[in-house]
Length: 332
Image 1: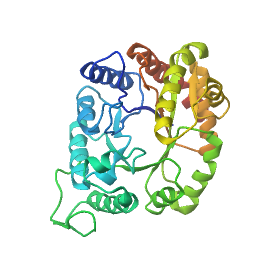
Image 2: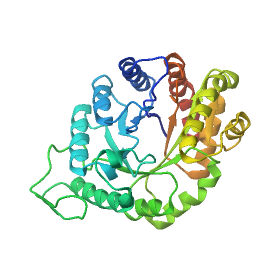
Image 3: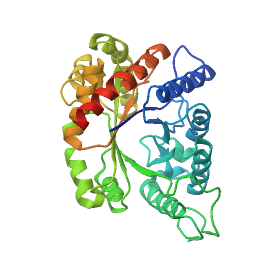
């Protein structure tokens, strides 16, 4: 089981953008030092998240780490140029010595579409077409490609070439069956975001992926969570920020406000929030694996304005206590 952390670079109420970037670099460095497997950064174009260009931050992370893999979470491929995405991640792969990955998605936020001159009515065809081109670039060699939403491309090759061959490309989904089937049909690894409900609700999604052609392909899940020495401490640090985050996004999308009772319900059993002591968190990660058979688990812990010190402690506990418990249990 690979275990890592993901972040959107949440803007803190009490920290300047420059300070927040420095904090993120320290968090990534610690994740590498404590033996976590992946550091992933999400692309956004809105005031509450820092990172609009994941490869820029990931290149800085690459320069100060040794072994941790580096990924977007996600690259909003629909509003990107696949050629530039490929080149940027190929260069990151060279800088990092072969540790780069692309996690491509349609994006749960839509700010990038008008920002880069795209029409939301083309939401689905944009992604399908750009993914097709990105995968052709993955093959290497000459390319002759035509589409409806980007100029045709004829070239002897796209450079630079990465260290890895092929450069890993994952498909990130929130649960849309058509997206899951596409990943399976293309034999691409699937990253499943579980931000609400219960893990058991996603068993059908995984079964669909496996039956549609994804059998044997890597599967990752990404969930919100936090680790502290005990559950009371973990919840006191994480709950206010998680509730504020969900209600802020919920106001934009017409969701009902999350109550403290609803938050607590999601921390219990196979609920979508992974929070507590190292033993609590390990048990929940193992339980999710028993249900879904995932080979990778990503925790999104730095939500809202949780202090840098508390996030650093959570990363250290995830790497030094949670991960060994999970790996020992699954190896046994």
